[in-house]
Length: 103
Image 1 (cartoon, helix red, strand yellow):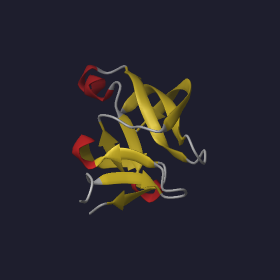
Image 2 (image 1 turned 30 degrees about the horizontal axis):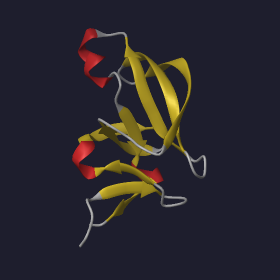
Image 3 (image 1 turned 120 degrees about the vertical axis):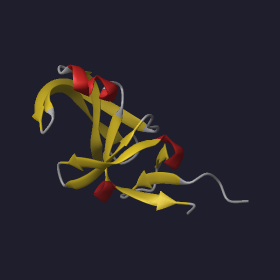
Image 4 (image 1 turned 90 degrees about the vertical axis):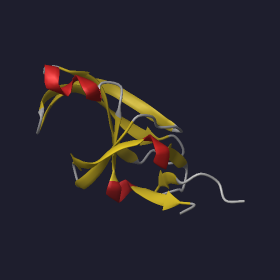
């Protein structure tokens, strides 16, 4: 029996997110394409900081794999523009930092 489709850390294969939690695949990360997820697991969230992103000012916190400490993306803590509020509490995971499992 094959488990659910997942994304894992590219470095240590720690399970990070479920495919079912992908909201969008059309985001931009620091190093190229990124996915927006509603949930992430087995991660650590770093300190909050204000960052000017392509869509405006946001308060974000970097997210790290809890096993190998690889930076995987960030969590949106606060969006200052009304049109960006849907991102609050969501996660950006960079495509180059995650791998598919059980596909």
